[in-house]
Length: 90
Image 1: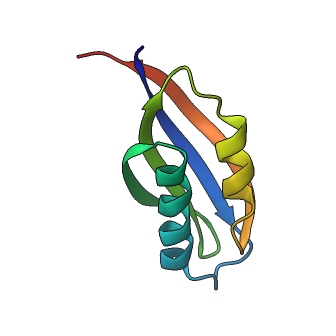
Image 2: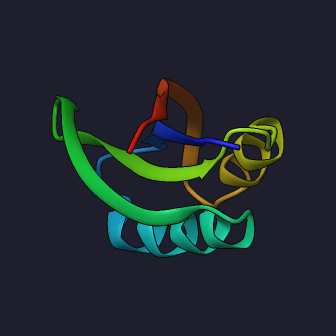
């Protein structure tokens, strides 16, 4: 089996939300779902609001819906969107 590389956007409920807490909880979710090499970036949206971009690798045979569902349960996360998914080679 190959490895899929994912980029998922987590939108917080407001600009005042602690993004570090969201990152910690998201990393835990990703690791519980057998995700590897989890890293984060913050993407400015508008008016001080920043999205948390989650990057990680996962076995391509694994379904994404359970991961998305768990990420959407994180407190102060308004929406979850898979932005990019591709197969890793090498």
